[in-house]
Length: 65
Image 1 (cartoon, helix red, strand yellow):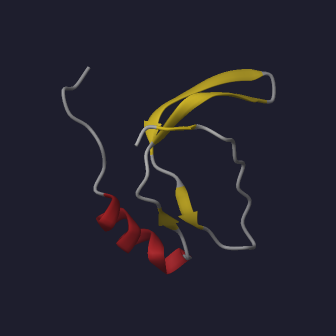
Image 2 (cartoon, rainbow, N blue to C red):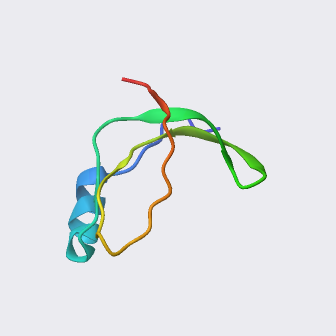
Image 3 (tube, rainbow, N blue to C red):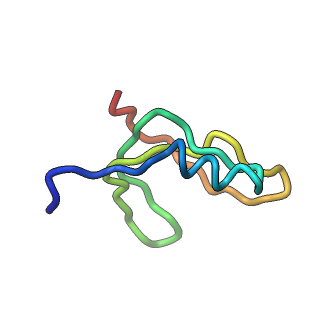
């Protein structure tokens, strides 16, 4: 298990911007179910912007902030 982690969200947002996608600046975690699969989202950001023609599956998670 690494001592540090994360991603360069500003650089990822620069890359994703040409597709109309942006990541947020808040961090979330939590359990959820997708179909018959129980999942755990350990820690990560949200999708702040996404094209209206796209499909997003969402779930309410705990804000780590």
